[in-house]
Image (cartoon, rainbow, N blue to C red):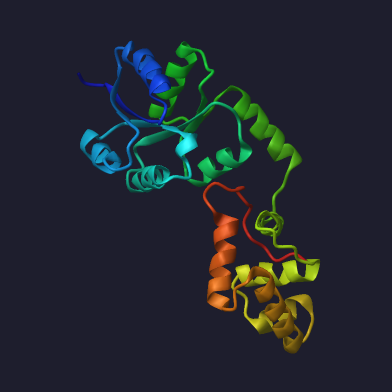
Length: 235
């Protein structure tokens, strides 16, 4: 039947998936063509089924299944990706935005609204359901994450405590600045910079500039993390 919206549900919770399937399949223009909860055949099913919409449970966000889904989305930008979640988590939402999802759905939505959101996303709209939209607006109003602030938060999560000067050095390393550029930015000698760099290497337990930069980029830009604003040098 022409015009059918083909949907794949990616979820470990079969009870919820089957409930969603019943709701979706009751619509004339929608069909759940598969429910996937096994990473081994996930990619093959995605390719063979050629879905229009993927409903993806955020509990799998940081798993290999999540990586496969996001890779598939990058390779198939016309496929719509909707995150399913039981409650709002700002880190999940920011991570979803970073992964270019097409919308977010709370499981608590009434069936009619749930179906309406799927149609809207299929037709090219970006959807934030219910409380998710409200909380995001509040976060935007109240919080401005700079890259340096995100870096400090990530270091704290790794139990790495640094001084403000050490944070400056790590931030400039993250920006891939050379020692001379760092010296010019913070207005100290290159000899002092070398001392600071050695000190922060000890703090992060990495004694290699390339590996240190990779580590910093990994913790700042991780998929599930805060979505930072564009880097800028501000001291």
